[in-house]
Length: 137
Image (cartoon, rainbow, N blue to C red; front, side):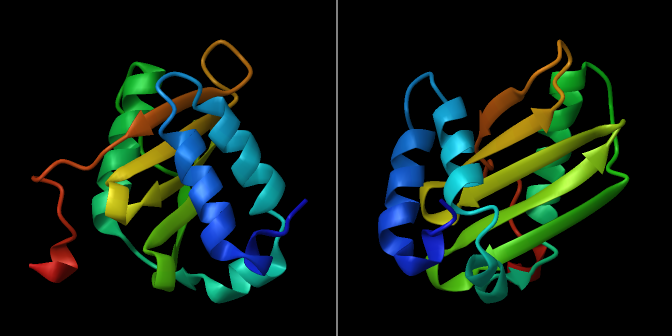
């Protein structure tokens, strides 16, 4: 439990594999929570990152899930730079959104807690060509 920082390449590979499963995205969320979320060294090595391109995509995912436009009350985004791995959380409409995103795979997972029907709603997302990081233009 919470040992991701002991072997980032291994744990990120497992997380990526679970994230890319054709239908069962929840396994990736559970793995992230078990191995990464409470790992203090993982957080120490992650740096705050504004990532406006991710915020746009995450707001779109949350709005689609909730069925109405929404804004974040607060958000925290981080980057594990050596692995091009973003992660973070946001507060919106009395809910929490946790996410992670692999830049090299252009794929991420967002989990809304509680979901519209209770429990957790999980969505996999990609950034489109139109949603590039404006700091790189």
